Length: 69
Image (cartoon, rainbow, N blue to C red; front, side, top):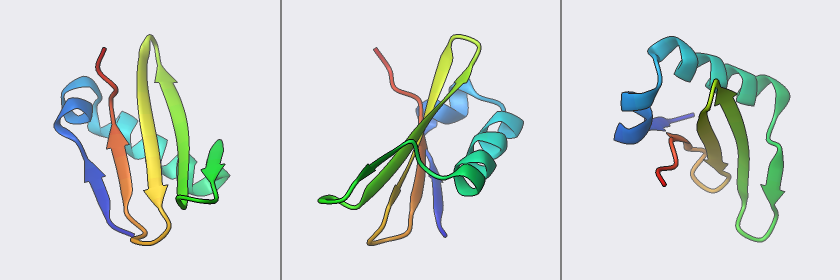
């Protein structure tokens, strides 16, 4: 599996938090699955910060992103 960490996630989260979220995603699976688009996603909270992890089934790529307001 390929993993992409967006700049926004790199700025907001420590490497340990990024690794923990990805490991939890791989272990427990997604919280949301979109069968039409093949996207699996989960959100992880670290204090008041939210990290989104999603995986595209076609590419098998996991993306870690911090949504900015």
